[in-house]
Length: 419
Ligand SMILES: C[S@@+](CC[C@H](N)C(=O)[O-])C[C@H]1O[C@@H](n2cnc3c(N)ncnc32)[C@H](O)[C@@H]1O
Ligand code: SF4
Image (cartoon, rainbow, N blue to C red; front, side):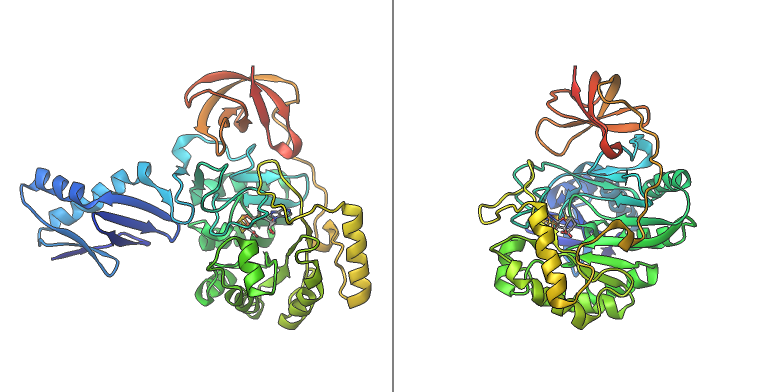
């Protein structure tokens, strides 16, 4: 009897399907019959393949079969990868693909002209907040595809960017989705910690996937702060806002405390929708105080709900002008004595820094190669001058060489239209 497991993964069996779960987030489905047929073709024996306690179990003692199956699975993985939470197909970006990691907002690195660099290793989310600016999570109407960037490749680009930007950087792990889904999140924090240009490592998270072990690992790896998205302290309202009926508010509150106890600072970051959860503001402040949030940075980061073109915009959320939002925050500061609630970049040690020079000018027409499908309908991703360009309203195919008019260059995120 052979019992097979691959590094950082386990198997699940579902009738005729065998699912490989790799590093929590990535899954690949294999047909049990096809595996058995591949063995029969190669070794001329009939064997049965099953799953038991996370192992692939094969009723043979032939070690050649074990090696063959391990190779078979690894070899076929690339085209089968899916995100376990969103169920969407995953494109795994690695060095050999020649995909630049600057220019696109769904993965890679973003430089907004300060000492903070956004690091985006993957897309996809385990929640589906009813107000989500990026329409993330399972059953998204707009997002068709997920990306995961290989950690070594991400770090290689980070190193280049960090050298351009200088010392004293904050590496901020965020995503069009949930950063804790990134399969290499602990290793990423650890590697960034060792980078001589990085002073602070922070993360934006919904906290759902945290557990005591992961909190400890992240603390040990050197994570400094988590901006934790909690939108209600009422369990039922929180479920409604997070769009997931199993959302366990208590668990997230416990993890908030566990983060603080592990030495990772916490900033509680509710999205405020007036008439929905603004009445909970004082309770959020009270909770943040009680757990000892905000040791090095502000304890609260109330966010004003903003409707987005490709986001989910529920009817219960009425947008409020920022002027009014800031007035509300000022009153809250006075009433509760919790300061600052109106957050400024300097509260986070964020200062302007020269941008990595832009690769394109607005209005310029460039020749580009289409290298990847985009995440939303009609979007393709092209490459030129070692940068990514999000090409909208395109019916081009991967491999096409097209002319693109650059219509947006803000913060080094390039958007273009075909000409
Ligand atoms: C898109 S999320 C990604 C990180 C992570 N999934 C999370 O929720 O913390 C980034 C932040 O934007 C907030 N957010 C999402 N949709 C928003 C909206 N429509 N208006 C304002 N903030 C929003 C989230 O609550 C979160 O704090
Ligand atoms: S706001 Fe964050 S947690 Fe909520 S669905 Fe969007 S990406 Fe996921």
